[in-house]
Image 1 (cartoon, rainbow, N blue to C red):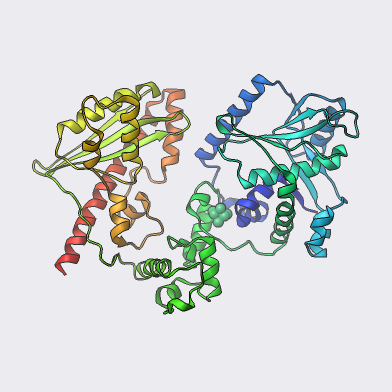
Image 2: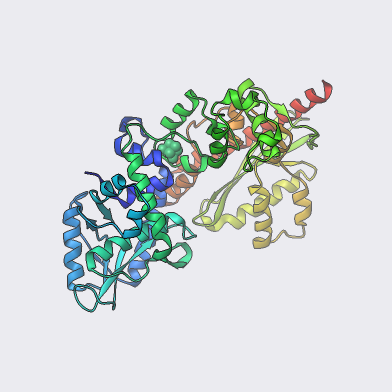
Length: 499
Ligand code: SF4
């Protein structure tokens, strides 16, 4: 019988395929846990540690994966009325009774299947409160400590799951579960509001896990980027030319296309549909954009957007600028600037590095001095992050008699210029995806922006210079990739106007 843990449920809420592969997939196809995920885990441990400093806890010990022993040790502490129990295990073995409303809303087979499963959950801390339970004048409610800033739906569903288990274990409804979030934010979960969705999700989860095949792949850049199955799923998606690889296709648009019978790239690229046949979720302008994107991918060629006439500033000297930041420490620790002098035919890369986070002000001053040396040079970057950061830095540290407007007027966002003027045969409009389409290669292949954040942390902890050098190399390649994109864009539009 299935052991339905909160971790499995959380994975299911994020991606049904992931939950399935974690349970039944070929582990040799999974990548090791990504460095950025490990970093997030460490930060969460630090968060828990800070809470524990203020409110000491008693930690439950048990052999790894032995939920039953973990539960018995937790139960023993609860019966004794211990104030705060950390790493406790809530465990419920079959048969157990489903709440009435969930039985009504689901088929008999999935209800009985669910009530035959063992349920396991591990709240960060169980906190004693004065509500009476089967043990006396006390009971417990769950507290979950999370890195997120917002009380996400997935956190609330897991808290509601824990509240159900606690109700069964202590014989009374717990006080509303508490979420402790980043920056000290707190949120109480109204379980009555979430329980219908919880039981529907549990039934759906069980039904998906009972299938003989993994749920359909759906590549979502944000969701998949931290998943161990990313490479395996991308391979499947590319082999089948899955529509989720088309930029702009969201799960709801994918569903709407499916209802129109459009499931393949070639169909999306070629089908003729009058506007009145489009469903509400696909407005004519969205449809046009998706079809244009599919055509570009299908024919493997860039397509200029109708009426686009981009103005691409150019100069005898040009600066290509890219930042590296560590969000947790709230520091921009590397200002990379590639200076291209077309007159003298020279290229020079400047890496302005805060070797300690406190040096951010110093590298800001160095950056201002550098751009002042070339007052007429356009400053190219990829994404609004760089110009947003210049604004933020000018507010934080000042500009020493310069005006922020004069600096921002020199900034040219290559990403914005590309998306406003052309459709490209790429799976995403990230710097990496576009530059790789132009056959640009990074010297450290496989490295990502997320990993540079981890490398900076490792540099600060170990003082190992190779970590810093890797980040600098990566940043220089980002600047060179931006240069390549700009050169391509100029050439592309010259050929369009000449034609
Ligand atoms: S890579 Fe994406 S689609 Fe594949 S299992 Fe992970 S989250 Fe799901």
